[in-house]
Length: 55
Image 1 (cartoon, rainbow, N blue to C red):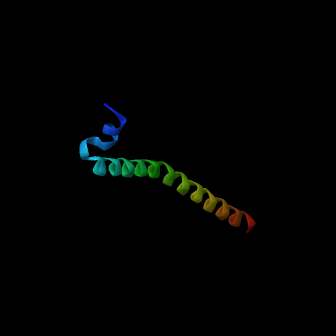
Image 2: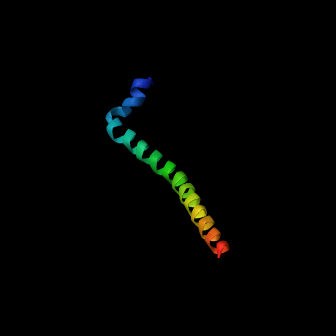
Image 3: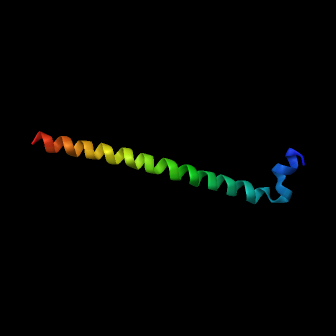
């Protein structure tokens, strides 16, 4: 099996590689999105706590 035949995927590469790409994007998104949401939530809570202590 050569690299060319592997990349060609028996003529189905046009369907297989985009499917791999979408899957990779979803997996990365499932890791990055919660991390960003957590940072935003912690920032908001910190601001809210500072407002409460200032009173």
